[in-house]
Amino acid sequence: MKQKELTKKAIELLKNLIETPSFSSEEDKTAQLIENWFVDFKIPFKRTKNNVWATNKHFSEDKPTLLLNSHHDTVKPNKGYTKNPFKAEIEDEKLYGLGSNDAGGCLVSLMATFTHFYAKKNLEYNLVIVASAEEESSGPNGLNSMLEIIPHIDVAIVGEPTQMNLAIAEKGLVVFDAKVKGTPSHAAHPNNDNAIYNTVEVLKWFHEYQFEKKSPVLGDVKMTVTQINAGKQHNAVPAEVDLVIDVRVNDRYTNEEIAKILKKKSPCTTIEARSLRLNSSSIPISHPLVEAGIELGRETYGSPTLSDQVALSCPSLKLGPGYSPRSHTADEFIYLNEIEEGIDIYIKLLEKVL
Image 1: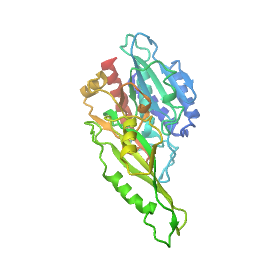
Image 2 (image 1 turned 180 degrees about the horizontal axis):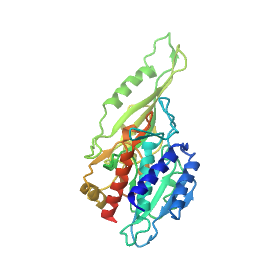
Image 3 (image 1 turned 180 degrees about the vertical axis):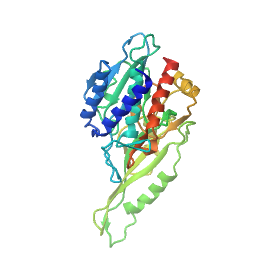
Image 4 (image 1 turned 90 degrees about the vertical axis):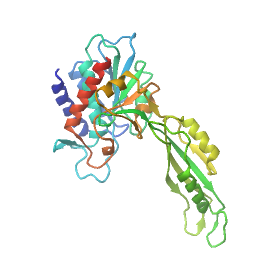
Protein backbone atom coordinates (compact mmCIF):
# COMPACT_ATOMS: atom_id res chain seq x y z
CA MET A 1 0.00 0.00 0.00
CA LYS A 2 1.22 3.47 -0.86
CA GLN A 3 2.32 5.76 1.97
CA LYS A 4 -0.40 8.31 1.15
CA GLU A 5 -3.11 5.67 1.56
CA LEU A 6 -1.54 4.41 4.80
CA THR A 7 -1.59 7.97 6.14
CA LYS A 8 -5.26 8.35 5.25
CA LYS A 9 -6.13 5.12 7.07
CA ALA A 10 -4.03 6.14 10.08
CA ILE A 11 -6.00 9.39 10.40
CA GLU A 12 -9.28 7.47 10.17
CA LEU A 13 -8.10 5.16 12.93
CA LEU A 14 -7.16 8.16 15.08
CA LYS A 15 -10.64 9.62 14.63
CA ASN A 16 -12.16 6.34 15.83
CA LEU A 17 -9.78 6.19 18.80
CA ILE A 18 -10.74 9.74 19.82
CA GLU A 19 -14.43 8.84 19.76
CA THR A 20 -13.87 5.74 21.92
CA PRO A 21 -13.16 6.60 25.60
CA SER A 22 -10.00 4.85 26.82
CA PHE A 23 -9.06 6.03 30.29
CA SER A 24 -6.16 4.15 31.86
CA SER A 25 -7.16 0.53 32.66
CA GLU A 26 -10.37 1.03 30.63
CA GLU A 27 -8.87 0.63 27.14
CA ASP A 28 -10.66 -2.54 26.03
CA LYS A 29 -12.64 -0.84 23.24
CA THR A 30 -9.69 1.03 21.75
CA ALA A 31 -7.71 -2.22 21.92
CA GLN A 32 -10.42 -3.72 19.70
CA LEU A 33 -10.00 -0.88 17.19
CA ILE A 34 -6.27 -1.58 17.08
CA GLU A 35 -6.96 -5.29 16.57
CA ASN A 36 -9.19 -4.36 13.64
CA TRP A 37 -6.30 -2.51 11.99
CA PHE A 38 -4.14 -5.63 12.05
CA VAL A 39 -7.00 -7.79 10.84
CA ASP A 40 -7.64 -5.41 7.92
CA PHE A 41 -3.97 -5.58 6.91
CA LYS A 42 -3.81 -9.36 7.46
CA ILE A 43 -1.08 -9.00 10.08
CA PRO A 44 -1.06 -11.66 12.83
CA PHE A 45 -1.19 -10.10 16.29
CA LYS A 46 -1.61 -10.97 19.94
CA ARG A 47 -3.41 -9.24 22.76
CA THR A 48 -2.40 -9.35 26.41
CA LYS A 49 -5.07 -7.63 28.51
CA ASN A 50 -5.39 -4.26 26.72
CA ASN A 51 -1.96 -4.35 25.09
CA VAL A 52 -1.95 -5.29 21.40
CA TRP A 53 1.30 -6.37 19.76
CA ALA A 54 2.78 -7.89 16.62
CA THR A 55 6.11 -8.79 15.04
CA ASN A 56 7.28 -8.37 11.46
CA LYS A 57 6.62 -11.21 9.01
CA HIS A 58 10.25 -12.32 8.68
CA PHE A 59 11.18 -12.17 12.36
CA SER A 60 14.48 -13.95 13.06
CA GLU A 61 15.97 -14.91 16.41
CA ASP A 62 19.40 -14.14 14.94
CA LYS A 63 18.72 -10.42 14.57
CA PRO A 64 18.48 -7.59 17.12
CA THR A 65 14.97 -6.33 17.79
CA LEU A 66 13.65 -2.78 17.55
CA LEU A 67 10.51 -1.95 19.54
CA LEU A 68 7.96 0.54 18.25
CA ASN A 69 5.71 1.60 21.11
CA SER A 70 3.05 4.13 21.96
CA HIS A 71 -0.04 4.08 24.16
CA HIS A 72 -3.77 4.23 23.56
CA ASP A 73 -4.98 5.22 27.02
CA THR A 74 -5.79 8.84 27.92
CA VAL A 75 -6.20 11.01 30.95
CA LYS A 76 -9.71 12.21 31.77
CA PRO A 77 -10.76 15.45 30.06
CA ASN A 78 -10.39 18.58 32.16
CA LYS A 79 -13.18 21.07 32.79
CA GLY A 80 -11.75 23.63 30.39
CA TYR A 81 -12.96 21.85 27.25
CA THR A 82 -15.19 23.93 24.98
CA LYS A 83 -15.47 21.09 22.45
CA ASN A 84 -16.70 17.55 22.96
CA PRO A 85 -13.50 15.68 23.93
CA PHE A 86 -14.91 12.48 22.42
CA LYS A 87 -15.79 13.93 19.04
CA ALA A 88 -13.13 13.98 16.32
CA GLU A 89 -13.52 17.38 14.71
CA ILE A 90 -11.34 18.84 11.96
CA GLU A 91 -11.04 22.62 11.82
CA ASP A 92 -8.30 24.58 10.06
CA GLU A 93 -6.36 21.36 9.41
CA LYS A 94 -6.39 20.53 13.13
CA LEU A 95 -7.87 17.26 14.41
CA TYR A 96 -9.42 17.95 17.80
CA GLY A 97 -10.21 15.41 20.49
CA LEU A 98 -8.96 13.82 23.70
CA GLY A 99 -5.80 11.81 23.05
CA SER A 100 -5.24 13.24 19.58
CA ASN A 101 -1.85 14.69 20.53
CA ASP A 102 -1.02 12.45 23.49
CA ALA A 103 -0.43 10.03 22.06
CA GLY A 104 -2.92 8.99 19.39
CA GLY A 105 -1.07 10.71 16.57
CA CYS A 106 2.13 8.94 17.55
CA LEU A 107 0.42 5.57 17.88
CA VAL A 108 -1.30 5.58 14.50
CA SER A 109 1.86 6.90 12.82
CA LEU A 110 3.90 4.05 14.29
CA MET A 111 1.23 1.54 13.31
CA ALA A 112 1.33 2.84 9.75
CA THR A 113 5.14 2.63 9.80
CA PHE A 114 5.13 -0.92 11.13
CA THR A 115 2.60 -1.90 8.46
CA HIS A 116 4.83 -0.36 5.78
CA PHE A 117 7.78 -2.54 6.83
CA TYR A 118 5.84 -5.63 8.00
CA ALA A 119 6.40 -7.88 4.97
CA LYS A 120 9.81 -6.60 3.87
CA LYS A 121 12.62 -9.14 3.68
CA ASN A 122 16.25 -8.91 4.77
CA LEU A 123 15.82 -6.22 7.41
CA GLU A 124 18.75 -5.55 9.72
CA TYR A 125 16.43 -5.50 12.74
CA ASN A 126 13.33 -7.39 13.74
CA LEU A 127 10.37 -5.12 14.44
CA VAL A 128 7.96 -5.46 17.34
CA ILE A 129 5.09 -3.03 17.82
CA VAL A 130 3.23 -2.69 21.11
CA ALA A 131 0.14 -0.50 21.41
CA SER A 132 0.22 -0.30 25.17
CA ALA A 133 -2.24 0.44 27.96
CA GLU A 134 -1.96 2.27 31.29
CA GLU A 135 0.84 4.65 30.31
CA GLU A 136 -0.86 7.70 31.79
CA SER A 137 -1.30 6.01 35.17
CA SER A 138 2.03 4.10 35.16
CA GLY A 139 -0.20 1.12 35.88
CA PRO A 140 0.84 -2.52 36.35
CA ASN A 141 -0.73 -3.75 33.11
CA GLY A 142 1.02 -1.54 30.57
CA LEU A 143 4.27 -1.87 28.66
CA ASN A 144 6.10 -2.88 31.84
CA SER A 145 3.98 -6.05 31.96
CA MET A 146 4.80 -6.93 28.35
CA LEU A 147 8.59 -7.14 28.50
CA GLU A 148 8.59 -10.80 29.56
CA ILE A 149 5.98 -11.64 26.92
CA ILE A 150 7.31 -10.00 23.77
CA PRO A 151 10.74 -10.90 22.29
CA HIS A 152 13.85 -9.44 23.91
CA ILE A 153 14.23 -5.76 22.94
CA ASP A 154 17.60 -4.27 21.99
CA VAL A 155 16.51 -0.71 21.22
CA ALA A 156 13.20 1.18 21.18
CA ILE A 157 11.36 4.11 19.67
CA VAL A 158 8.71 5.38 22.07
CA GLY A 159 6.04 7.48 20.41
CA GLU A 160 5.32 10.68 22.32
CA PRO A 161 4.79 14.19 20.88
CA THR A 162 8.24 15.66 20.19
CA GLN A 163 7.55 17.55 16.93
CA MET A 164 9.54 14.68 15.37
CA ASN A 165 12.70 15.88 17.09
CA LEU A 166 14.91 13.37 18.88
CA ALA A 167 14.49 13.19 22.65
CA ILE A 168 17.70 11.30 23.38
CA ALA A 169 17.21 11.40 27.16
CA GLU A 170 14.26 11.61 29.52
CA LYS A 171 14.16 12.57 33.16
CA GLY A 172 13.12 10.02 35.74
CA LEU A 173 10.70 10.68 38.59
CA VAL A 174 10.70 10.04 42.31
CA VAL A 175 7.83 11.24 44.50
CA PHE A 176 8.64 11.62 48.20
CA ASP A 177 6.33 11.82 51.20
CA ALA A 178 7.86 13.81 54.05
CA LYS A 179 6.89 14.91 57.52
CA VAL A 180 7.91 17.90 59.60
CA LYS A 181 7.05 17.38 63.26
CA GLY A 182 6.53 19.73 66.18
CA THR A 183 4.73 19.95 69.48
CA PRO A 184 0.93 19.98 69.35
CA SER A 185 -0.77 22.60 71.50
CA HIS A 186 -3.75 24.89 72.00
CA ALA A 187 -3.44 27.95 69.76
CA ALA A 188 -3.97 30.26 72.76
CA HIS A 189 -0.76 29.16 74.50
CA PRO A 190 2.92 29.84 73.60
CA ASN A 191 4.60 27.19 71.46
CA ASN A 192 8.18 27.47 70.25
CA ASP A 193 7.96 24.15 68.37
CA ASN A 194 5.04 24.80 66.01
CA ALA A 195 5.24 22.22 63.18
CA ILE A 196 3.87 24.69 60.65
CA TYR A 197 6.48 27.33 61.51
CA ASN A 198 9.16 24.62 61.47
CA THR A 199 8.12 23.89 57.90
CA VAL A 200 9.17 27.36 56.70
CA GLU A 201 12.88 26.51 56.90
CA VAL A 202 12.24 23.11 55.37
CA LEU A 203 10.49 24.66 52.38
CA LYS A 204 13.35 27.12 52.01
CA TRP A 205 15.82 24.22 51.96
CA PHE A 206 13.93 22.41 49.20
CA HIS A 207 13.67 25.65 47.21
CA GLU A 208 17.38 26.39 47.43
CA TYR A 209 19.04 22.96 47.38
CA GLN A 210 21.03 22.12 44.23
CA PHE A 211 22.18 18.63 43.30
CA GLU A 212 25.81 18.66 42.22
CA LYS A 213 25.70 16.68 38.97
CA LYS A 214 24.33 18.50 35.93
CA SER A 215 23.54 16.63 32.73
CA PRO A 216 24.59 18.11 29.38
CA VAL A 217 21.33 16.85 27.91
CA LEU A 218 18.82 16.97 30.80
CA GLY A 219 20.24 19.79 32.89
CA ASP A 220 19.75 19.89 36.66
CA VAL A 221 17.72 17.59 38.84
CA LYS A 222 14.48 19.52 39.47
CA MET A 223 12.93 19.27 42.93
CA THR A 224 9.52 20.80 43.66
CA VAL A 225 7.29 20.74 46.75
CA THR A 226 3.86 20.14 45.25
CA GLN A 227 1.59 19.42 48.24
CA ILE A 228 1.39 20.51 51.87
CA ASN A 229 -1.17 19.47 54.46
CA ALA A 230 -1.58 20.08 58.18
CA GLY A 231 -4.14 20.85 60.86
CA LYS A 232 -7.83 20.10 61.27
CA GLN A 233 -9.16 22.92 63.42
CA HIS A 234 -8.45 26.61 63.89
CA ASN A 235 -7.52 26.50 67.58
CA ALA A 236 -5.13 23.54 67.60
CA VAL A 237 -1.50 23.51 66.52
CA PRO A 238 -0.93 20.20 64.69
CA ALA A 239 1.74 17.69 65.63
CA GLU A 240 3.07 17.40 62.10
CA VAL A 241 2.97 18.75 58.56
CA ASP A 242 2.86 16.44 55.54
CA LEU A 243 4.74 17.38 52.37
CA VAL A 244 4.90 15.84 48.91
CA ILE A 245 8.05 16.47 46.87
CA ASP A 246 8.27 15.81 43.12
CA VAL A 247 11.85 15.15 41.96
CA ARG A 248 12.70 14.96 38.23
CA VAL A 249 15.96 13.05 37.98
CA ASN A 250 18.60 13.60 35.30
CA ASP A 251 20.75 10.84 33.78
CA ARG A 252 23.66 11.53 36.13
CA TYR A 253 21.86 9.99 39.11
CA THR A 254 19.93 6.83 39.82
CA ASN A 255 16.70 7.17 41.75
CA GLU A 256 18.31 5.24 44.61
CA GLU A 257 21.10 7.85 44.81
CA ILE A 258 18.57 10.68 44.97
CA ALA A 259 16.72 8.92 47.79
CA LYS A 260 19.93 8.44 49.79
CA ILE A 261 20.90 12.10 49.38
CA LEU A 262 17.53 13.38 50.56
CA LYS A 263 17.41 10.98 53.50
CA LYS A 264 20.83 12.20 54.59
CA LYS A 265 20.57 15.93 53.90
CA SER A 266 16.94 17.09 53.95
CA PRO A 267 15.79 18.74 57.19
CA CYS A 268 12.53 16.77 57.31
CA THR A 269 11.71 14.60 60.30
CA THR A 270 11.06 11.72 57.91
CA ILE A 271 11.19 11.37 54.12
CA GLU A 272 10.31 8.27 52.09
CA ALA A 273 10.17 7.55 48.36
CA ARG A 274 6.91 6.11 47.04
CA SER A 275 8.73 4.22 44.27
CA LEU A 276 12.20 4.07 42.78
CA ARG A 277 11.25 2.35 39.50
CA LEU A 278 10.70 5.40 37.27
CA ASN A 279 14.31 5.93 36.25
CA SER A 280 15.74 8.31 33.67
CA SER A 281 16.47 6.87 30.23
CA SER A 282 18.69 7.70 27.29
CA ILE A 283 20.25 6.61 24.02
CA PRO A 284 23.82 7.41 22.89
CA ILE A 285 24.03 10.25 20.39
CA SER A 286 26.24 7.91 18.35
CA HIS A 287 23.49 5.27 18.03
CA PRO A 288 22.51 4.62 14.38
CA LEU A 289 18.90 5.66 15.08
CA VAL A 290 20.01 9.03 16.40
CA GLU A 291 22.56 9.53 13.64
CA ALA A 292 19.87 8.73 11.07
CA GLY A 293 17.54 11.30 12.61
CA ILE A 294 20.25 13.95 12.62
CA GLU A 295 20.92 13.21 8.94
CA LEU A 296 17.22 13.93 8.34
CA GLY A 297 17.62 17.35 9.94
CA ARG A 298 16.00 16.53 13.29
CA GLU A 299 17.26 18.20 16.46
CA THR A 300 18.28 16.39 19.64
CA TYR A 301 17.18 17.41 23.14
CA GLY A 302 16.44 16.12 26.64
CA SER A 303 12.81 15.61 27.64
CA PRO A 304 11.50 16.65 31.08
CA THR A 305 8.31 14.56 30.76
CA LEU A 306 7.79 10.92 31.67
CA SER A 307 6.81 8.15 29.24
CA ASP A 308 6.86 4.37 28.88
CA GLN A 309 10.62 4.67 28.47
CA VAL A 310 10.79 4.21 32.24
CA ALA A 311 9.84 0.55 31.72
CA LEU A 312 12.78 -0.11 29.39
CA SER A 313 16.33 -1.07 30.29
CA CYS A 314 17.60 -0.86 26.68
CA PRO A 315 18.55 2.33 24.82
CA SER A 316 15.39 4.18 23.80
CA LEU A 317 14.52 7.20 21.70
CA LYS A 318 11.42 9.32 22.28
CA LEU A 319 10.10 10.52 18.93
CA GLY A 320 6.68 11.39 17.58
CA PRO A 321 4.37 13.87 15.87
CA GLY A 322 2.58 16.51 17.93
CA TYR A 323 3.68 19.06 20.49
CA SER A 324 4.15 18.08 24.12
CA PRO A 325 2.69 21.28 25.71
CA ARG A 326 -0.69 20.46 24.07
CA SER A 327 -0.91 17.23 26.07
CA HIS A 328 -3.56 17.15 28.80
CA THR A 329 -4.86 20.60 27.78
CA ALA A 330 -8.43 21.60 27.00
CA ASP A 331 -9.44 21.20 23.35
CA GLU A 332 -6.42 19.03 22.63
CA PHE A 333 -5.52 18.74 18.95
CA ILE A 334 -2.93 17.62 16.44
CA TYR A 335 -2.34 19.04 12.97
CA LEU A 336 -3.12 16.63 10.16
CA ASN A 337 0.17 17.50 8.49
CA GLU A 338 1.99 16.52 11.68
CA ILE A 339 0.70 12.97 11.25
CA GLU A 340 1.66 12.97 7.58
CA GLU A 341 5.14 14.25 8.45
CA GLY A 342 5.43 11.80 11.35
CA ILE A 343 4.80 8.77 9.16
CA ASP A 344 7.16 10.09 6.49
CA ILE A 345 10.02 10.71 8.95
CA TYR A 346 9.50 7.41 10.80
CA ILE A 347 9.74 5.54 7.49
CA LYS A 348 12.77 7.49 6.26
CA LEU A 349 14.49 7.02 9.63
CA LEU A 350 13.97 3.27 9.64
CA GLU A 351 14.99 2.95 6.02
CA LYS A 352 18.41 4.23 7.09
CA VAL A 353 18.86 1.56 9.79
CA LEU A 354 16.79 -1.39 8.56
